Image (tube, rainbow over all chains, first blue to last red; front, side, top):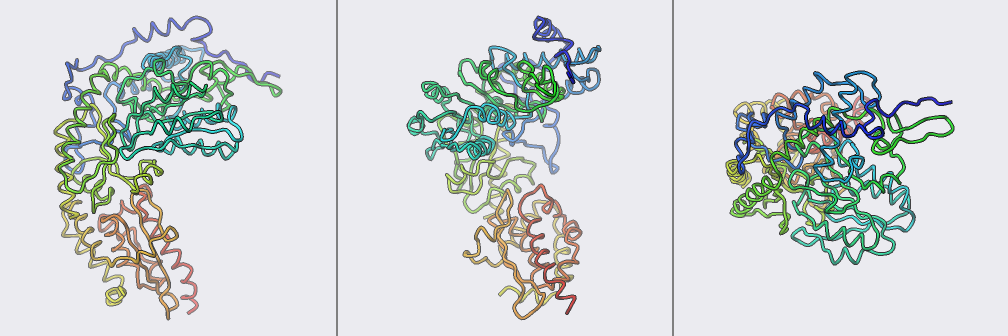
Length: 444
Length: 154
């Protein structure tokens, strides 16, 4: 009665010891040469890698300051996608033919790149998903549904993105569990004392954002994890905003799950990563059923595939994974320690400049902050500010940033948000500031 | 009341005035400045009406709308509306000029999309903008549709 029984993969990356081959191939496979060697941080050379930055917007040079929404893509990523569809496209893991083996090898090589990028212990701990949202939903739907019951408590923070609120709320409704929220101070910093008070014997999970998309706050996640682990509670970090700005070491953090998106990390849209500790992932039931996640299927009993495939049902976003691999290569070449220092400088420069604008108030003034500048201007709605800056070719975000409870905490409906990447310049900050003055005058 | 000036002009005349004004505006920035000024002239809405029930949901800014048939008429619709954003308030002012004080049949037959396209403002009505304007048009038209059959019977 076996309906389908296929070998996991003709390349068989994990089971038959050919893992090493994949690594070797990944290291020797031709990647396009970088057009520069940044020393120490040559922003103009980096900008040259991003073709979109050369274009005009509203007949003005594009000033792209909406990086927290999505980042632009370097030429190497665009080339890699082109190469994949031009010369490597095939379905993976099952093919008996040349192209399928090639695509499978590149797909698995990207997994290993990402393993190294966040320093996971094992490549099987890297699960490809559509993005941070799906990664969190996977943990909620699999780990959460199995391990959380009536009266159990889940802790999140007041600065979570809706993606790290709503899935937990759905779970709480289903299971009769209770959602607890770590409050913040007026600067937008988590109150760790309050967090400690929330932790108790009913706490079954902690899910916290690493860097806030709306405030820029870098949360003290190591301490948060230590405290949770002291009670044997696992922790998920939403790393969507952190991965483009700082080096992530999941072993050093000792987080149990780490979720991030490719498109914010200079990679393609529609691809993201869930890191999970192997022992936790092993014990979790599948999240979705379909192809590639099974070992054998009969109408009586289906046995599931091993990690990571157990969580990758259906044909995955092969091009996205390979493109993300190229993005990660690029980011490692740039070096996030160097880029992060440059961004911090840019943020300081912008923070000082906006302080001179009358009526402007920063929302989120944490001591530990990534290059995100959220603000409101007296007498101007953030959407007015955004639309008027847009006439100058300057792209920012205006809205609640999918963090409505956080906006409520600050008693505002929305903020305007400029978010910087390592390819932004002081000249762009100057254009942004000039645009703000102009907008204020028009609204004045 | 604010119906006085709309009463003086027909819907076609209001539309023609706006189209002529917008022809003078060379850039998006000038259009926005004009909208900001139109918004300033929009009579403020009663604060008590700015409640959740009257809110037209949008992502970027808030819009409130109270629409009702004019007492003593069968099908003339008056409305008050406001936004917490200046540019959107200008767009609200334009909709008010076109729709408020008009009979239901006129509201339903007016080609709002074509008109906004002529002004160069059609992108603000598109679904993705989420500023509540599209929803506002929908609400006004829905109310008009409930009154229009009476009009036909009349």
